Image 1 (cartoon, rainbow, N blue to C red):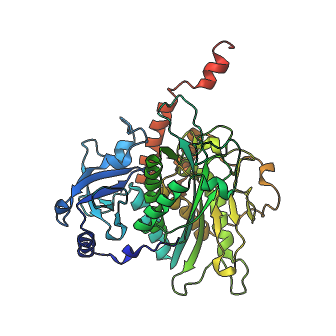
Image 2 (cartoon, rainbow, N blue to C red):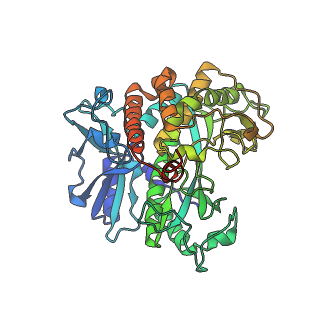
Image 3 (cartoon, rainbow, N blue to C red):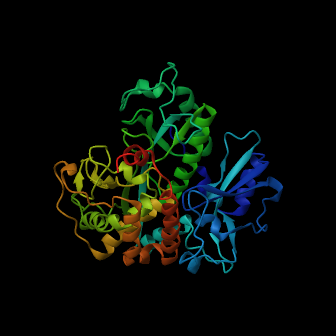
Length: 459
């Protein structure tokens, strides 16, 4: 299926109103992606959704952790005002989509967050990605990305103390072995995927290939390449859509990085290339078709800065369980051509489509933050002409770990890297790290089954 989002032509509020009227929309979901990628916002009757409404939300709404909590004190409040001031929400008309599972005609529109002076709120994830794209535009460059998003289908499980299991398919059985690239294994869930594709088509999501990944019940969906902000919006919408569709088929869909012990984790691989805006040509290739210096500098930037930026794309304690040897996930930032053991891969492609694939990012990452992170690292490589290490031509799992092994370690590295602060914004880094530190402290209060199993009577 090839869906084309024609909403890119909807540029003004008048265009948006016409779109809503043509579809007889009765409700509008006003969405704001928060730090975790959760959809926050308000639902309005259609007649209340007007250009002069001036809809507002407290600024802390986009700066909460995954548990809904935020720091009680500290540097967080150097950015977030303790008196809980409002943000002004402004709809982006090009993001409007129908809500395909709603009973009555309902639209969903992503909003940007502004302060009272009319400036983008710097710690809102969509603002950060806009800023990074603006840095590229100032250099005459246009980034192009294509995400590949993995997720698991699971049997319903309402008890967090019970282990997760693959769901039962059409055959009446659940998977007990790995079915990588199996067509029949995908067909086990035909009713779900037929409805999912139908929803994606109604929403204009440019999803491409669907495959069964290595894990039991693990799937992957690929997106067509496009501008980073538009594709981050599509991933945001897709996550919401696949979770809703799975529920309607009595299953769960999860983007946890490592939901099942002994099974591979789920990633969000992001393919990236950079176009010269004047010529439209890919700056990663020379006129003779060989890799350019820009190609190597971009990789050099990823190698230099990804370790410091890992907390942005491995945002939870669970994220680091995915990054283990021989599990289809990288453990370092080696690079190579057509090599899936490395963290930074250059797939086989013609010169015009030469690209760099960042394989470090987890499926649990906020898509706006993930694209900001990888483009920021590449941008610093281009600007500072950073040379990469020699290409890894063998198995990168034989090389040492070169990524942080825990969220605590990753947060320390991110706090110390001033170059990333300059590109992504001090306010965003401060709010993000303080919020994640709060989450980490909450997790450390939990006693795990492993501790009870091995420590209770043996130490």
